[in-house]
Length: 171
Image: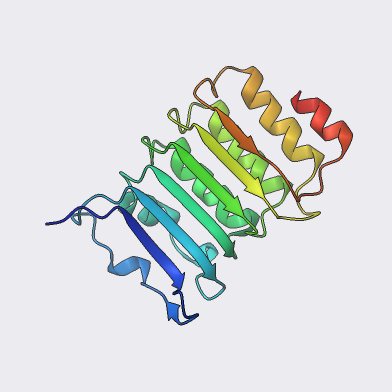
């Protein structure tokens, strides 16, 4: 069958909801290269088994989570999956306005320190507001200095609660 280039869950151009239940995707489906979850307030990844989700997304190269309810708990669950070897081909991860904060980013950074996401080239953690602050940057800095982010080429961290001190930790 045809190979999917992008799978979008969220609202369409006219604002109509387009939601595909994650459980309906079968691992035998053609590999998705990019997955965009946008405007999905009703799609709360905190209530999904991340191990199942990651198995379904095993060959995804880019994941864009935008305007959703991932939160720290969901990101910690995702981090545990990637620590276990899920999403080894992932080159891009975007967490835009996903309600994540320091504890979620710390969990992700710990997974990165353990060698998760070895192909990651772009990490974008934007528009999460004051929930995400200096502690996140300290954790990411530790991952960067450990050498496990050697393939990382682009890091975006705007519109968060990061101070100058946090930025200096990463510098």
